Length: 529
Image 1: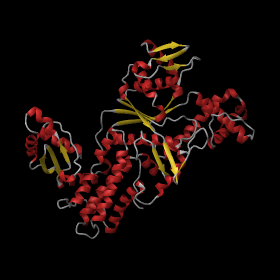
Image 2: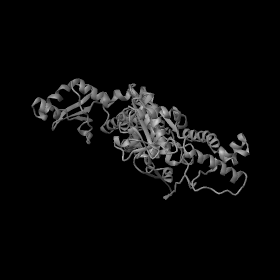
Image 3: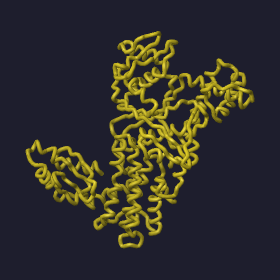
Image 4: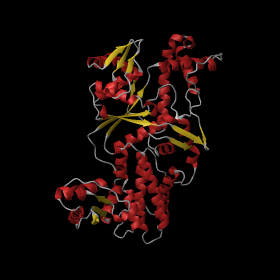
């Protein structure tokens, strides 16, 4: 809606304008300070310029009123224009708030957890945020491809092999084993150990030289668990990239860095001159034993990303990766690429409560809260919504018991109740949307017009949320719209009133906006509650 209004105003005024939404809707649906921008050029008072510009919209079918207010130009949309937008939305629900395809390709990488065990509740936050950003971007016409980087190289893989072996000795062969301080544990290891023995025989469990072989067999089984758990949450990926497979390109990548003078050797270690690009210190990329570091893997991976020629690269990392940003961007620059094309979103940790008591999360200690357990307990829709109620870079505390409340304290229930309530009103009136879709807004009261206007704001909210990578703006909008629906229903008699059918059309538009907004977030609106 805002794009249509903005394009029309710019066409009439023959200049670019900035549109704002007045806090008091009685002043107008939109306003522009363009007169202040033109004052110096035209050498006139902004008030005079605003009056002159406002006069250009006399008899405009889009606006009921255009007026100058203290140098601002306020625009009040006409009933007929709002009605035309509603009619189009009802007739083409799947295209509501959707925009034309844009010539911009985005590679979005997220989750990318080590393939050493099932995802915990902290991983769910990045998964949900990434999936929502991808869904919103695609709805707005961007070509967004999603990717999972499998960290299947490094010490964690050796530790996985050892952990499977220990689990087999402890629980299958009932031996007394001594566990190292850092190892993986959980029921999933026992299932993997059984699969290892079934494929390779029990001897491999006792062969220390086979830990890596065990690990890479186990990794595939863990990835199956991860993919299933993500799927249960409604999260899928277009591509998966193996870190291990990329290391075959390390020497080639290293040569590029050496040739442009971005590496040096000290104490038998190879360093990246990352301080040249603002890092606190230069970083080791090859250890003194000749083995590339974790950073080397990141360098190869980002070279691979840039070689695929996307217009934008977005990574969602855990907050503990903050220190990696400058060193990775330094490597990108050294490889001859534009690090400004890489955007990093940091995902803060989650504190999960149950009945007001915090759960302790420790992957090493074995009392990790599995993402799959919470998905199973409260449902994917509730988990997705609550994780999108805060921006990713802020801490999130939530109590799973609160998501079971059947009242306004539970935002998922509150929004779904608004949607289901509208369906029930239609049933009570014994009508369908087809029965009311041709109703005119000519005499619609202000409450109805305000609700229609709010319902049509979804597209603007999506654009702002995507631009700022802030999905919280969408959940806040849906919650606010649900509140407006409940208030409208309480303040205006619908069924049996003389305005019944036009009110039902207004409510159908609101339900549509809730339904589409939730769907874009990967959530299905409830029809009955």
